[in-house]
Each structure stands twice: as C-alpha cells, then as structure tokens.
Length: 285
Ligand SMILES: C[S@@+](CC[C@H](N)C(=O)[O-])C[C@H]1O[C@@H](n2cnc3c(N)ncnc32)[C@H](O)[C@@H]1O
Image 1 (cartoon, rainbow, N blue to C red):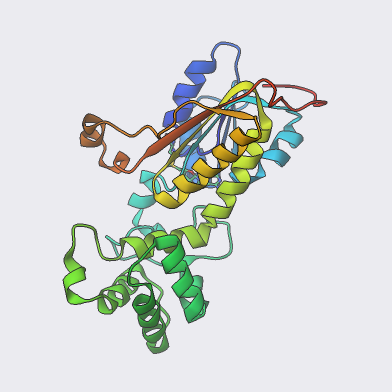
Image 2: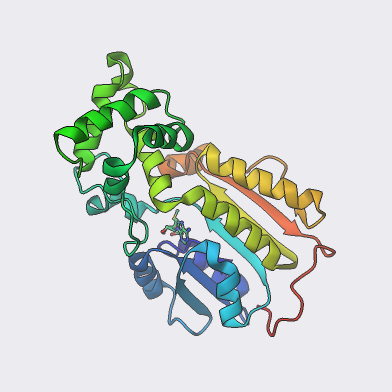
C-alpha cells in the first residue's frame, strides 16, 4: 500500500497494521522534516516500510525506479499537517508573525514572499479568486500591490495588515479570520497543489491493482471537486467503482476531539477487475 502523504505517520501506522504480516508500505511526503519524525514512529525504513521524500505527482517514476508494477491501496490525506501549521517559522498561519514562506518542501525555489512581491496584480487577483474563492479578491490584490510599493512584504503579519486594510470594516471580524482565504490561496499557489493532485490521481488510478482501493481525504471544495471528477471519469471508463456516492464526513464527536477534521471529506473507490493492473512489470506490492 502507498501512503502518499505520510505527515507524522498516523495513517501510515494503521496501514502497516493492515498489511502485516507480509505486506509492504511505501510512504511519500515532500516535507523532509515530517518524514524524519514519521521514520522514528514507523520503525526501521527498508523493512516493511520505504519512506521516500518526493512529490505525489511522481508516483509513476517512483514505482518504475523501485521496479514495482502496482499497489493494492493508495491514501491521500491532502493539505498541510498540524505540525506545518503550528510551526510558526514556516509561515502557514496568520496567527503568528513569521517569514512568508509556506513551502511544504523547504528545498523548493518559490516561496510565498516571491509570489506576493513579484506577481502582477491580475495574477494575484486570479490566485485569490481561484484558489481562495475570496470575495474581496480585487481589493486585496490592489492592497498588496500598494503595500509592496512601500517595502517588500516579507512577513505573514504585513500580509494580514494588507488584507485587513482591503476588506470593508464589517467583514473584518467574522467567525472565520479575515485572512483565511488569502492564506489558503497563497499556499495552494506556492505548492502547486491542484495540478499536482490531478496528475497524482491519474497515476494512482493507473497503478492500482485490480480490486485495489484509493482513498482521498480533502479539506476544501477545490480539492474535493477534483477528486469527485477524477473518480467520475474513471468510473465512466469502467476502471473504478465508487465505494460511496457521497463523501464520508466526520461525526460531531470526532470534530469535538479534533477541530481540524471539521472540513474533511473522504472519497473512496475500488479498481475494477477489467480496469486491470499494469502488465509487464517485475514485482507487485
Ligand atoms: C494532512 S497531512 C498528512 C497527515 C498524515 N496523514 C498523518 O497521519 O500524520 C498532509 C501531508 O502531505 C504532504 N504533502 C502535501 N502535498 C504533497 C505532495 N504533492 N507530495 C507529497 N507530499 C505532500 C504535506 O507535506 C503533509 O505532510
């Protein structure tokens, strides 16, 4: 089985239990620090578990490199981990002042400050509208441009100020923090989350063994729409059967214990037998 988003390894641990004895787990994450922590929880890499630093849109090449033809299960638990949000220095949260970074892979080139200070106004506007579904996208983009003319915007604090300045007074103190959608939009752009998800789902569906299962947990409507459409497409081609028509959502009790689960949606689908495995490869998980 493959955990495409190991994070701190919570799901991976359960997946190892599920495949033991005799099974094998491949765990991917683009965040080297998360993998280091997960590695300590998941036992010695190389035994039943291979932890690989990589992007989940590289599944085809990772499998090829490992000489593996297919897998019985893929899990995607999308977005950022609690550790990434809570680590102030990484700039994912508007709750603490930090450098505008937001890279899940700290080795990648473009950070949030680069987008905020270099993108054109129409590009910022598009990012806020498309990835944040932000009502005040035009006003916020204009405010960012005017703020960065004074001095480059290098911190989450200054970005929050630019957002607060842009939105009407009444909208500043809602239930949800006024900068939530701007931060979501920027994070998606920095990490190229949506196009990577589309590519990854195509590859995972292709690599699933007959009767294998793919599960995806998403946390906002943009991700969920992609998952829903990809599953629908594969179903129309006869390669997937949906395990659930509507996404599975957490119970009140689960949300009480873990507030960050409140927006989670789980979709699962099973590879049909005629959907077929991948032929002509050396080994199967
Ligand atoms: C919600 S967390 C996963 C938490 C995990 N299920 C657990 O039990 O701890 C999402 C993780 O996916 C990783 N991630 C997000 N996009 C990725 C991508 N394109 N490729 C690889 N890892 C990715 C993030 O770095 C983060 O650690």
